[in-house]
Image (tube, rainbow, N blue to C red; front, side):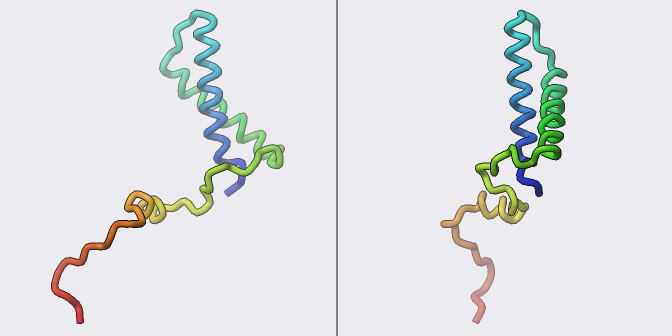
Length: 91
């Protein structure tokens, strides 16, 4: 995965916030569909920037390279929980 890929989500959220502030500043109501449109627009802009200038994006502060379903379930399970054995003891 490219190092700039997680920044696509950050760019989408940033566009959503900027659009909301601009609509409130102008006194216009912010429509529901505008949230999705702004997120998609921000993601596209940051994605294009990531392809054209990948060195401009620093490493994302959260390591998402090894993110799998197994690692997510291990995170939810927690390291201090014990496995429960059901049935007779094995000898």
